[in-house]
Length: 245
Image (tube, rainbow, N blue to C red; front, side):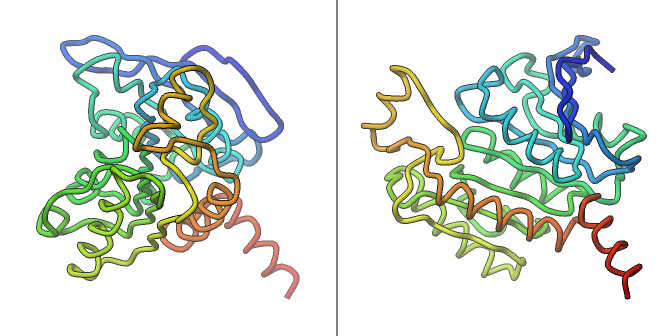
């Protein structure tokens, strides 16, 4: 499975190797809930442009694991054979602790364009898209699962793509929850630091963390995922409520 790196009260992180192409392996991280027995819903999480080593993707995956999901982060830059979500999706679906009937994909920035196209052609129950690319036509999204999407109003390069995605989903009658946060910049879910982050902050992306947009996105995302995918935490809460009746 891989080397155990950290264990918190609610989540366990392992550094792993995934099959890529020609028998080679690629890096990945697997986070799973520390409480409960599973099986849990599975989630493939595709990282931002800054890459696999950035702490932002780990924070996001950890929060999903604490909510009751098994989350896999493949390194999109490591091996070309796993550059898309298909390889990672097949790998995590084969884990005994993952409920293959409840599987979702979430992508951010660079990793956000893949899930939309993948979810239109694969057995994915829900898709979360954050400030990423969008196909030109609604036909490219025929067959896509329910979509949760969040974009930033100050992001001059991608805010129009959010509006385009909304038009596409309405045209093909796909259940969705899409929000464009007028006061937020690109990558508002992350906490960018350093010189590169400063350059991106003054660019057309207006990259910056926005706590209000981030927390509202989490609220919307977990509600949307519970509706279309479910979670171990939600299942346990529902069972407890039934016992009290």
